[in-house]
Image (cartoon, rainbow, N blue to C red; front, side, top):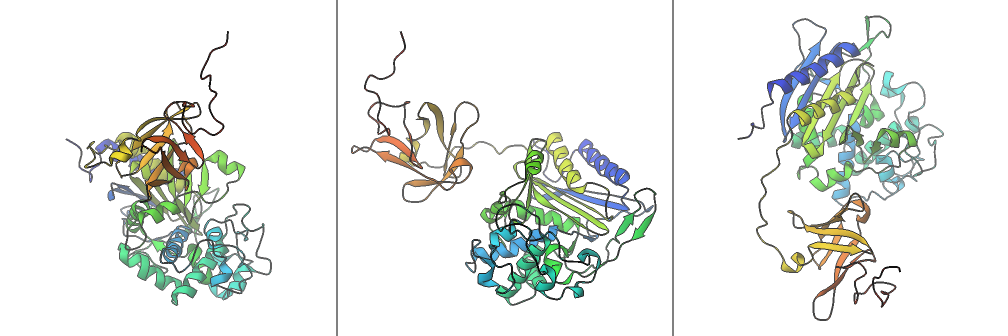
Length: 461
Protein backbone atom coordinates (compact mmCIF):
# COMPACT_ATOMS: atom_id res chain seq x y z
CA UNK A 1 0.00 0.00 0.00
CA UNK A 2 1.40 3.39 -0.95
CA UNK A 3 1.04 6.77 0.73
CA UNK A 4 -1.62 8.93 -1.00
CA UNK A 5 -0.12 11.51 -3.33
CA UNK A 6 -1.67 14.41 -1.41
CA UNK A 7 0.01 13.50 1.90
CA UNK A 8 3.53 14.04 3.15
CA UNK A 9 4.81 12.27 6.22
CA UNK A 10 4.92 14.35 9.43
CA UNK A 11 8.72 14.13 9.57
CA UNK A 12 8.95 15.44 6.01
CA UNK A 13 6.64 18.35 6.77
CA UNK A 14 8.69 19.25 9.80
CA UNK A 15 11.93 19.14 7.77
CA UNK A 16 10.38 21.49 5.18
CA UNK A 17 9.21 23.88 7.90
CA UNK A 18 12.65 23.82 9.50
CA UNK A 19 14.29 24.72 6.19
CA UNK A 20 12.12 27.76 5.52
CA UNK A 21 12.25 28.84 9.18
CA UNK A 22 16.04 28.77 9.02
CA UNK A 23 16.00 30.70 5.74
CA UNK A 24 13.66 33.37 7.11
CA UNK A 25 15.60 33.77 10.36
CA UNK A 26 19.11 33.75 8.91
CA UNK A 27 18.08 35.79 5.87
CA UNK A 28 16.18 38.26 8.08
CA UNK A 29 13.18 38.31 5.76
CA UNK A 30 10.02 40.12 6.91
CA UNK A 31 8.13 37.14 5.51
CA UNK A 32 8.84 34.02 3.50
CA UNK A 33 6.31 31.70 1.94
CA UNK A 34 6.85 28.40 0.14
CA UNK A 35 5.04 25.54 -1.56
CA UNK A 36 5.97 22.04 -2.74
CA UNK A 37 4.40 20.21 -5.68
CA UNK A 38 4.48 16.44 -6.14
CA UNK A 39 2.85 14.39 -8.90
CA UNK A 40 1.19 17.52 -10.26
CA UNK A 41 -0.44 18.54 -6.97
CA UNK A 42 0.50 21.02 -4.24
CA UNK A 43 1.28 18.84 -1.22
CA UNK A 44 2.73 21.33 1.23
CA UNK A 45 2.54 25.03 1.99
CA UNK A 46 4.41 26.88 4.69
CA UNK A 47 5.31 30.40 5.75
CA UNK A 48 7.29 32.33 8.32
CA UNK A 49 6.83 35.95 9.24
CA UNK A 50 8.09 38.67 11.57
CA UNK A 51 4.52 39.74 12.38
CA UNK A 52 2.92 37.90 15.29
CA UNK A 53 -0.29 36.09 14.45
CA UNK A 54 0.06 36.65 10.72
CA UNK A 55 1.29 34.08 8.22
CA UNK A 56 0.93 34.64 4.46
CA UNK A 57 -0.91 31.87 2.67
CA UNK A 58 -0.83 30.58 -0.91
CA UNK A 59 -3.02 33.48 -2.11
CA UNK A 60 -0.81 36.39 -0.96
CA UNK A 61 0.91 38.11 -3.87
CA UNK A 62 4.62 38.85 -4.03
CA UNK A 63 6.55 40.39 -6.86
CA UNK A 64 8.37 37.63 -8.79
CA UNK A 65 10.89 39.65 -10.81
CA UNK A 66 12.64 37.68 -13.54
CA UNK A 67 10.39 34.63 -13.28
CA UNK A 68 8.36 36.92 -15.55
CA UNK A 69 10.87 36.07 -18.29
CA UNK A 70 9.70 32.46 -18.30
CA UNK A 71 6.13 33.64 -18.92
CA UNK A 72 7.34 35.84 -21.79
CA UNK A 73 9.29 32.92 -23.25
CA UNK A 74 6.12 30.80 -23.22
CA UNK A 75 4.38 33.45 -25.36
CA UNK A 76 7.25 33.40 -27.86
CA UNK A 77 7.31 29.58 -28.04
CA UNK A 78 3.57 29.65 -28.74
CA UNK A 79 4.21 31.88 -31.76
CA UNK A 80 6.86 29.44 -32.92
CA UNK A 81 4.58 26.43 -32.50
CA UNK A 82 1.85 28.21 -34.49
CA UNK A 83 4.29 28.78 -37.37
CA UNK A 84 4.20 32.56 -37.02
CA UNK A 85 7.97 32.70 -36.54
CA UNK A 86 11.06 30.51 -36.39
CA UNK A 87 13.49 30.71 -33.50
CA UNK A 88 16.28 31.13 -36.06
CA UNK A 89 14.66 34.26 -37.48
CA UNK A 90 16.52 37.50 -36.85
CA UNK A 91 14.46 39.90 -34.77
CA UNK A 92 14.60 42.40 -37.63
CA UNK A 93 12.36 40.14 -39.73
CA UNK A 94 9.42 40.64 -37.39
CA UNK A 95 10.29 43.79 -35.42
CA UNK A 96 12.33 46.08 -37.66
CA UNK A 97 14.19 49.20 -36.69
CA UNK A 98 15.29 48.33 -33.14
CA UNK A 99 19.01 48.58 -33.80
CA UNK A 100 19.41 45.11 -32.28
CA UNK A 101 17.69 43.14 -35.01
CA UNK A 102 20.72 41.05 -35.99
CA UNK A 103 20.15 38.75 -33.01
CA UNK A 104 17.87 35.79 -33.56
CA UNK A 105 14.82 35.12 -31.44
CA UNK A 106 16.53 32.06 -29.97
CA UNK A 107 19.55 34.17 -29.01
CA UNK A 108 17.31 36.67 -27.24
CA UNK A 109 15.56 33.86 -25.36
CA UNK A 110 18.88 32.30 -24.33
CA UNK A 111 20.65 35.59 -23.45
CA UNK A 112 23.25 35.18 -26.19
CA UNK A 113 22.20 38.28 -28.15
CA UNK A 114 25.19 40.29 -26.92
CA UNK A 115 22.91 42.98 -25.49
CA UNK A 116 23.69 44.88 -22.30
CA UNK A 117 22.53 43.44 -19.00
CA UNK A 118 20.57 46.56 -18.08
CA UNK A 119 19.00 49.60 -19.71
CA UNK A 120 20.78 52.99 -19.53
CA UNK A 121 20.53 55.07 -16.35
CA UNK A 122 18.57 55.75 -14.25
CA UNK A 123 18.26 52.37 -12.51
CA UNK A 124 15.19 50.91 -14.19
CA UNK A 125 13.99 48.81 -11.25
CA UNK A 126 13.58 51.85 -8.98
CA UNK A 127 12.31 54.45 -11.45
CA UNK A 128 9.04 54.82 -13.40
CA UNK A 129 8.77 53.05 -16.73
CA UNK A 130 7.53 56.33 -18.17
CA UNK A 131 11.18 57.42 -18.27
CA UNK A 132 11.72 54.75 -20.96
CA UNK A 133 8.68 55.08 -23.23
CA UNK A 134 10.31 53.65 -26.38
CA UNK A 135 12.55 50.70 -27.17
CA UNK A 136 15.32 53.15 -28.03
CA UNK A 137 15.19 54.40 -24.42
CA UNK A 138 15.55 50.83 -23.16
CA UNK A 139 18.43 49.90 -25.48
CA UNK A 140 20.40 53.15 -25.50
CA UNK A 141 22.81 54.35 -28.16
CA UNK A 142 25.17 51.34 -27.79
CA UNK A 143 22.97 48.35 -26.96
CA UNK A 144 25.58 45.63 -27.48
CA UNK A 145 28.30 44.55 -25.08
CA UNK A 146 29.43 41.42 -26.95
CA UNK A 147 29.28 39.98 -30.47
CA UNK A 148 25.91 38.43 -31.24
CA UNK A 149 25.69 34.72 -30.47
CA UNK A 150 29.18 34.33 -28.98
CA UNK A 151 28.56 34.14 -25.23
CA UNK A 152 25.92 34.03 -22.54
CA UNK A 153 25.31 37.48 -21.08
CA UNK A 154 22.08 37.91 -19.13
CA UNK A 155 20.06 40.76 -20.66
CA UNK A 156 16.92 42.38 -19.28
CA UNK A 157 16.54 44.60 -22.39
CA UNK A 158 16.59 41.41 -24.48
CA UNK A 159 13.32 40.32 -22.89
CA UNK A 160 11.87 43.78 -23.40
CA UNK A 161 12.46 43.18 -27.12
CA UNK A 162 10.74 39.78 -26.88
CA UNK A 163 7.74 41.42 -25.20
CA UNK A 164 7.62 44.01 -27.98
CA UNK A 165 7.81 41.16 -30.52
CA UNK A 166 4.77 39.51 -28.93
CA UNK A 167 2.87 42.81 -29.08
CA UNK A 168 3.80 43.32 -32.73
CA UNK A 169 2.69 39.86 -33.83
CA UNK A 170 -0.39 39.57 -31.62
CA UNK A 171 -1.59 43.14 -32.05
CA UNK A 172 -2.36 43.50 -28.33
CA UNK A 173 -0.35 44.63 -25.28
CA UNK A 174 2.02 42.08 -23.74
CA UNK A 175 -0.03 41.78 -20.58
CA UNK A 176 -3.25 41.14 -22.52
CA UNK A 177 -1.60 38.43 -24.60
CA UNK A 178 -0.22 36.86 -21.44
CA UNK A 179 -3.57 36.82 -19.71
CA UNK A 180 -5.45 35.44 -22.72
CA UNK A 181 -2.91 32.81 -23.75
CA UNK A 182 -1.30 31.65 -20.50
CA UNK A 183 -2.80 32.93 -17.25
CA UNK A 184 -6.46 32.21 -17.95
CA UNK A 185 -5.98 28.77 -19.56
CA UNK A 186 -3.77 27.64 -16.66
CA UNK A 187 -6.07 29.13 -14.01
CA UNK A 188 -3.44 31.59 -12.70
CA UNK A 189 -6.02 34.11 -11.51
CA UNK A 190 -3.75 35.68 -8.87
CA UNK A 191 -0.95 36.52 -11.31
CA UNK A 192 -0.76 39.88 -13.08
CA UNK A 193 1.16 43.05 -13.78
CA UNK A 194 -0.36 44.99 -10.88
CA UNK A 195 -0.69 43.95 -7.22
CA UNK A 196 -4.11 42.92 -5.95
CA UNK A 197 -4.87 42.52 -2.27
CA UNK A 198 -3.80 40.60 -0.35
CA UNK A 199 -0.21 41.33 -1.30
CA UNK A 200 3.06 41.75 0.55
CA UNK A 201 4.92 45.03 0.83
CA UNK A 202 8.52 45.16 -0.28
CA UNK A 203 11.24 45.98 2.25
CA UNK A 204 14.96 46.66 2.41
CA UNK A 205 16.57 45.25 5.56
CA UNK A 206 19.62 47.14 6.83
CA UNK A 207 22.72 44.98 6.31
CA UNK A 208 24.16 45.76 9.77
CA UNK A 209 21.07 46.37 11.89
CA UNK A 210 17.66 44.77 12.33
CA UNK A 211 15.71 47.70 10.91
CA UNK A 212 13.80 48.05 7.64
CA UNK A 213 13.02 50.58 4.93
CA UNK A 214 10.07 50.32 2.51
CA UNK A 215 11.05 49.90 -1.13
CA UNK A 216 9.25 51.80 -3.90
CA UNK A 217 6.94 49.90 -6.24
CA UNK A 218 7.30 51.07 -9.82
CA UNK A 219 5.45 50.19 -13.00
CA UNK A 220 8.28 49.04 -15.25
CA UNK A 221 6.63 50.11 -18.50
CA UNK A 222 8.53 48.78 -21.49
CA UNK A 223 10.64 46.60 -19.18
CA UNK A 224 7.57 44.73 -17.91
CA UNK A 225 8.20 41.52 -19.93
CA UNK A 226 11.52 41.19 -18.07
CA UNK A 227 10.23 41.48 -14.50
CA UNK A 228 6.84 43.07 -13.88
CA UNK A 229 4.64 40.25 -12.61
CA UNK A 230 3.13 39.67 -9.19
CA UNK A 231 2.07 36.16 -8.24
CA UNK A 232 1.47 33.72 -5.40
CA UNK A 233 2.88 30.38 -4.35
CA UNK A 234 -0.47 28.85 -5.31
CA UNK A 235 -0.31 30.16 -8.87
CA UNK A 236 3.40 29.46 -9.29
CA UNK A 237 2.89 25.90 -8.09
CA UNK A 238 0.39 25.41 -10.91
CA UNK A 239 2.80 27.10 -13.34
CA UNK A 240 5.55 24.70 -12.22
CA UNK A 241 3.32 21.73 -13.07
CA UNK A 242 2.85 23.19 -16.55
CA UNK A 243 6.61 23.76 -17.01
CA UNK A 244 7.25 20.14 -16.08
CA UNK A 245 4.50 18.40 -18.02
CA UNK A 246 3.16 20.87 -20.58
CA UNK A 247 -0.47 21.62 -21.33
CA UNK A 248 -1.72 21.43 -24.91
CA UNK A 249 -3.91 24.49 -24.32
CA UNK A 250 -0.71 26.52 -23.92
CA UNK A 251 2.44 24.56 -24.90
CA UNK A 252 3.09 20.89 -25.53
CA UNK A 253 5.26 18.74 -23.29
CA UNK A 254 7.88 18.72 -26.06
CA UNK A 255 8.02 22.52 -26.20
CA UNK A 256 8.40 22.98 -22.44
CA UNK A 257 11.10 20.30 -22.51
CA UNK A 258 12.86 22.44 -25.12
CA UNK A 259 12.65 25.43 -22.78
CA UNK A 260 14.38 23.38 -20.07
CA UNK A 261 17.21 22.29 -22.38
CA UNK A 262 20.48 24.28 -22.16
CA UNK A 263 20.72 26.61 -25.15
CA UNK A 264 23.51 29.01 -24.21
CA UNK A 265 27.27 28.50 -23.88
CA UNK A 266 28.20 28.72 -20.22
CA UNK A 267 31.11 30.65 -18.73
CA UNK A 268 33.81 28.67 -16.92
CA UNK A 269 32.46 29.55 -13.49
CA UNK A 270 28.96 28.52 -14.56
CA UNK A 271 30.27 25.17 -15.75
CA UNK A 272 31.95 24.72 -12.37
CA UNK A 273 28.72 25.66 -10.60
CA UNK A 274 26.67 23.28 -12.75
CA UNK A 275 24.44 26.01 -14.20
CA UNK A 276 23.22 26.78 -17.71
CA UNK A 277 20.37 28.63 -19.45
CA UNK A 278 17.69 27.29 -21.77
CA UNK A 279 14.93 29.23 -23.50
CA UNK A 280 13.60 31.40 -20.70
CA UNK A 281 14.58 28.89 -18.00
CA UNK A 282 17.63 28.40 -15.82
CA UNK A 283 19.10 24.90 -15.54
CA UNK A 284 21.15 23.78 -12.54
CA UNK A 285 22.83 20.58 -11.41
CA UNK A 286 22.76 20.45 -7.61
CA UNK A 287 23.21 17.61 -5.13
CA UNK A 288 23.14 15.01 -7.90
CA UNK A 289 19.86 16.30 -9.32
CA UNK A 290 19.01 18.29 -12.43
CA UNK A 291 16.77 21.30 -11.79
CA UNK A 292 15.05 23.75 -14.10
CA UNK A 293 13.27 26.95 -13.20
CA UNK A 294 14.01 30.62 -12.66
CA UNK A 295 14.95 33.03 -9.93
CA UNK A 296 13.70 36.58 -9.62
CA UNK A 297 14.36 39.77 -7.71
CA UNK A 298 13.23 43.35 -7.65
CA UNK A 299 13.76 45.91 -4.90
CA UNK A 300 11.81 44.52 -1.95
CA UNK A 301 11.27 41.01 -3.29
CA UNK A 302 13.00 37.69 -3.97
CA UNK A 303 11.53 34.69 -5.80
CA UNK A 304 12.59 31.20 -6.79
CA UNK A 305 10.89 28.38 -8.71
CA UNK A 306 12.69 25.05 -9.01
CA UNK A 307 11.55 21.86 -10.77
CA UNK A 308 13.15 18.47 -10.21
CA UNK A 309 11.72 16.81 -13.31
CA UNK A 310 13.07 13.32 -12.67
CA UNK A 311 11.65 13.35 -9.13
CA UNK A 312 8.32 14.85 -10.31
CA UNK A 313 8.75 17.54 -7.65
CA UNK A 314 8.81 21.32 -7.67
CA UNK A 315 9.12 24.08 -5.09
CA UNK A 316 8.36 27.79 -4.96
CA UNK A 317 9.83 30.24 -2.44
CA UNK A 318 8.91 33.93 -2.17
CA UNK A 319 10.19 36.61 0.23
CA UNK A 320 9.59 40.34 0.60
CA UNK A 321 13.09 41.71 1.04
CA UNK A 322 15.67 43.14 -1.32
CA UNK A 323 18.38 40.73 -0.19
CA UNK A 324 18.64 37.98 2.37
CA UNK A 325 17.52 34.37 2.03
CA UNK A 326 18.90 32.45 -1.00
CA UNK A 327 15.43 31.55 -2.22
CA UNK A 328 16.58 29.64 -5.33
CA UNK A 329 18.78 27.39 -3.22
CA UNK A 330 16.03 27.01 -0.61
CA UNK A 331 13.61 25.88 -3.32
CA UNK A 332 16.11 23.25 -4.45
CA UNK A 333 16.52 22.13 -0.84
CA UNK A 334 12.76 21.68 -0.46
CA UNK A 335 12.74 19.41 -3.51
CA UNK A 336 15.71 17.47 -2.17
CA UNK A 337 14.14 17.02 1.28
CA UNK A 338 11.00 15.42 -0.15
CA UNK A 339 12.89 13.38 -2.76
CA UNK A 340 15.21 11.88 -0.15
CA UNK A 341 12.64 11.41 2.63
CA UNK A 342 9.92 10.03 0.38
CA UNK A 343 11.48 8.67 -2.82
CA UNK A 344 9.22 8.53 -5.82
CA UNK A 345 7.50 5.16 -6.10
CA UNK A 346 7.97 3.89 -9.66
CA UNK A 347 5.08 2.81 -11.81
CA UNK A 348 4.40 -0.90 -11.89
CA UNK A 349 6.19 -2.73 -14.67
CA UNK A 350 3.84 -3.84 -17.42
CA UNK A 351 4.64 -5.65 -20.65
CA UNK A 352 4.13 -3.84 -23.93
CA UNK A 353 0.66 -4.38 -25.40
CA UNK A 354 2.21 -5.15 -28.79
CA UNK A 355 5.57 -5.08 -30.49
CA UNK A 356 6.82 -4.81 -34.05
CA UNK A 357 8.86 -7.96 -34.69
CA UNK A 358 11.15 -6.13 -37.10
CA UNK A 359 12.07 -3.82 -34.23
CA UNK A 360 12.25 -6.58 -31.63
CA UNK A 361 14.92 -8.39 -33.65
CA UNK A 362 17.14 -5.32 -33.26
CA UNK A 363 17.12 -5.56 -29.45
CA UNK A 364 20.24 -6.74 -27.71
CA UNK A 365 24.00 -6.19 -27.98
CA UNK A 366 25.69 -4.30 -30.80
CA UNK A 367 29.27 -3.25 -31.32
CA UNK A 368 30.67 0.01 -32.60
CA UNK A 369 34.16 -1.22 -33.38
CA UNK A 370 35.10 -2.88 -30.10
CA UNK A 371 32.71 -0.81 -27.95
CA UNK A 372 29.76 -2.84 -26.63
CA UNK A 373 26.30 -1.24 -26.77
CA UNK A 374 22.79 -2.44 -25.98
CA UNK A 375 19.67 -1.54 -27.95
CA UNK A 376 16.46 -1.66 -25.94
CA UNK A 377 12.80 -1.07 -26.78
CA UNK A 378 11.25 1.65 -24.62
CA UNK A 379 7.73 1.80 -23.22
CA UNK A 380 6.85 4.84 -25.35
CA UNK A 381 7.37 2.92 -28.61
CA UNK A 382 10.89 4.15 -29.25
CA UNK A 383 14.30 2.63 -28.72
CA UNK A 384 17.40 3.48 -26.71
CA UNK A 385 21.05 2.80 -27.46
CA UNK A 386 23.74 3.03 -24.83
CA UNK A 387 27.08 1.53 -23.79
CA UNK A 388 27.04 -1.66 -21.75
CA UNK A 389 30.00 -0.85 -19.47
CA UNK A 390 30.08 2.52 -17.73
CA UNK A 391 29.44 5.89 -19.31
CA UNK A 392 29.46 6.80 -22.97
CA UNK A 393 27.31 7.95 -25.83
CA UNK A 394 23.73 7.21 -24.87
CA UNK A 395 20.58 8.37 -26.68
CA UNK A 396 16.89 7.71 -27.02
CA UNK A 397 15.33 7.48 -30.49
CA UNK A 398 11.86 8.10 -31.87
CA UNK A 399 10.46 6.25 -34.89
CA UNK A 400 9.94 8.51 -37.92
CA UNK A 401 7.44 6.30 -39.71
CA UNK A 402 9.69 5.28 -42.61
CA UNK A 403 11.62 2.55 -40.82
CA UNK A 404 14.24 4.88 -39.36
CA UNK A 405 14.63 6.56 -35.97
CA UNK A 406 15.73 10.06 -34.96
CA UNK A 407 17.87 10.73 -31.89
CA UNK A 408 16.15 12.69 -29.14
CA UNK A 409 19.02 13.49 -26.77
CA UNK A 410 22.68 12.98 -26.03
CA UNK A 411 25.40 12.72 -28.66
CA UNK A 412 23.04 11.37 -31.31
CA UNK A 413 20.29 14.00 -30.91
CA UNK A 414 18.87 14.71 -34.35
CA UNK A 415 20.90 11.93 -35.99
CA UNK A 416 19.25 9.17 -38.04
CA UNK A 417 19.48 5.50 -37.15
CA UNK A 418 18.51 2.80 -39.65
CA UNK A 419 18.84 -0.95 -39.92
CA UNK A 420 20.67 -1.93 -43.13
CA UNK A 421 19.43 -5.28 -44.38
CA UNK A 422 20.89 -7.88 -46.69
CA UNK A 423 19.02 -9.07 -49.81
CA UNK A 424 17.49 -11.91 -47.78
CA UNK A 425 16.03 -9.42 -45.25
CA UNK A 426 18.40 -10.19 -42.39
CA UNK A 427 20.09 -7.28 -40.64
CA UNK A 428 23.65 -6.62 -41.71
CA UNK A 429 24.33 -3.64 -39.43
CA UNK A 430 22.93 -0.47 -37.91
CA UNK A 431 23.89 2.83 -39.52
CA UNK A 432 23.88 5.71 -37.04
CA UNK A 433 25.08 8.98 -38.50
CA UNK A 434 27.52 6.94 -40.67
CA UNK A 435 28.76 4.88 -37.70
CA UNK A 436 28.36 1.14 -38.23
CA UNK A 437 27.14 -1.10 -35.40
CA UNK A 438 27.49 -4.88 -35.91
CA UNK A 439 26.34 -7.89 -33.90
CA UNK A 440 29.95 -8.92 -33.27
CA UNK A 441 32.99 -6.67 -32.99
CA UNK A 442 34.24 -6.15 -36.55
CA UNK A 443 31.95 -8.94 -37.69
CA UNK A 444 33.25 -10.95 -40.63
CA UNK A 445 31.06 -10.46 -43.68
CA UNK A 446 29.37 -7.32 -42.40
CA UNK A 447 29.70 -4.03 -44.24
CA UNK A 448 32.35 -2.51 -42.00
CA UNK A 449 34.04 0.59 -43.48
CA UNK A 450 37.67 -0.19 -44.20
CA UNK A 451 36.93 -3.91 -44.26
CA UNK A 452 37.87 -6.64 -41.78
CA UNK A 453 41.28 -8.29 -41.85
CA UNK A 454 40.72 -11.73 -43.46
CA UNK A 455 42.91 -13.43 -40.86
CA UNK A 456 40.47 -12.39 -38.15
CA UNK A 457 41.18 -12.01 -34.45
CA UNK A 458 44.49 -13.41 -33.22
CA UNK A 459 46.96 -13.23 -30.41
CA UNK A 460 50.65 -12.34 -30.38
CA UNK A 461 53.31 -15.02 -30.02
